[in-house]
Length: 123
Image (cartoon, rainbow, N blue to C red; front, side, top):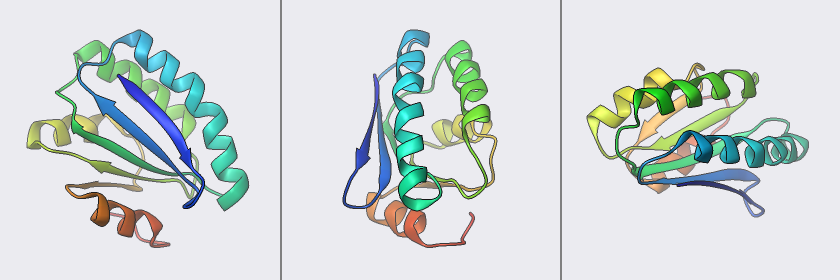
């Protein structure tokens, strides 16, 4: 299951991923993310995303490839993503799925928000 919402207070997108993710889940997520990314860019000039994947197991090869292809076409200069990760294996897979430099892999939400909202820093 994947879901994404716009955090009005901070102007960021909050993504939650729990359990296994199907290709249909990824497609539905992508459709919802498109309009929310435009909303975030209109407000901040870029898209800041906090992804909570701390309870997500390693994805199937097909799901990881599908998400990676989708992500590669959606991110623009200035976008930043902070991903909450629980395991080293999930971190390795996430690193393969993301194609941009402005991504940090962290273990606490407070740390992720601090990194995400700090301008100009790339991990």
